Structure formats: C-alpha cells, structure tokens
Amino acid sequence: MEAQANDRAHRIGQDKTVFVHRLVTAGTIEEKIGERKQALADSLFDREGNVGKALTEEDIAALLS
Image 1 (cartoon, one colour):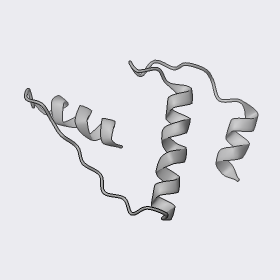
Image 2: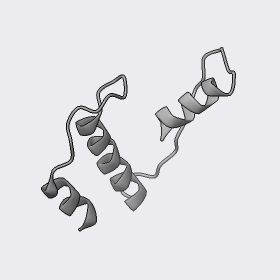
Image 3: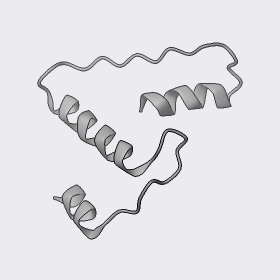
C-alpha cells in the first residue's frame, strides 16, 4: 500500500521526495494481513513491478482459505 501511495503521488505531478507513513498496532489482524500481503507481492513481482512468476493453484487455494 505504501508503494502504491508513493507512486500515486508522483503520477499526479509530485517531483519532490514523498514520505509515506503507516501506523499499525503490534499484534493486530491488520499487522498480520499486511505481512501476508507484502510477502505475496514480493513473491510475485520484482522491484520494477514485473511479474516474477505466475500464481499456482496452491497459491490461489491459500489466498482463498
């Protein structure tokens, strides 16, 4: 989400450094969801946003469980 917010700021014309802050309380469901989403994104895309690998049936089953 933070990378998306940063990219959005630059798309709307921002040319200076953008700082995106996210406050999450430790031990909450929001923290766990954030960790899983980041791990999934890291496994699917490289730093430039190119697809690193396709989702497998097991990946989709894990997401839906």
